[in-house]
Amino acid sequence: MQELIDLKRSSIDFERNLIFIKKGKGGKDRVTLLSNELKLDLLKYYSNYNFRTDYLIEGRNSKYSKKSVQKILEIAGKSIHKKVNPHMLRHSFATHLLEAGVNIRYIQKLLGHSNVKTTEIYTHVSNKSLENIKSPLDSLYKKNYNFSNIKNV
View 1 (cartoon, rainbow, N blue to C red):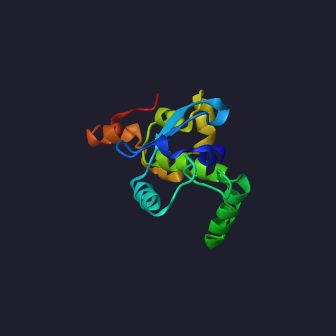
View 2 (cartoon, rainbow, N blue to C red):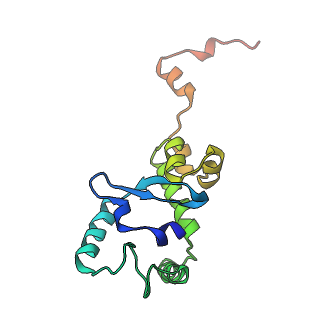
View 3 (tube, helix red, strand yellow):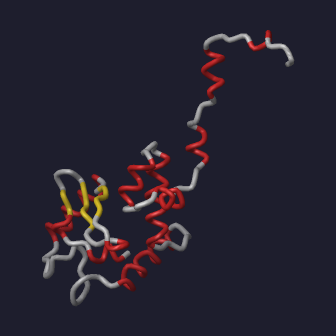
């Protein structure tokens, strides 16, 4: 959540659809994705809002507060009948990338993890991912191997 609160407009690269996170979790810099849909919404937001600070999302006095972000997520969660928190959004992001076939090493980089084991915690194996895995035996059957000739050993 702090990464969002600390995000400045200058950290968004609209040309390459990237967001540069400076001093994120663990004090590390990293790069993550900017979706095309969010990009369009941000460009509309930029054109209709008169900024007083460098922050992407401004509060009354400067940057947004944690309490305000939590309240927004609480309201959004009610519409889907779920309790939503920033960690769930991060976990969902990682899971959807995994289900889309993105290599776990890329997900690791996008989340800013030093160790892939940490990423594996975020990305539980889903049934959708398992459905896409083909048994190596399938390719043998396609080659018309006749397994009926194999005798008990």
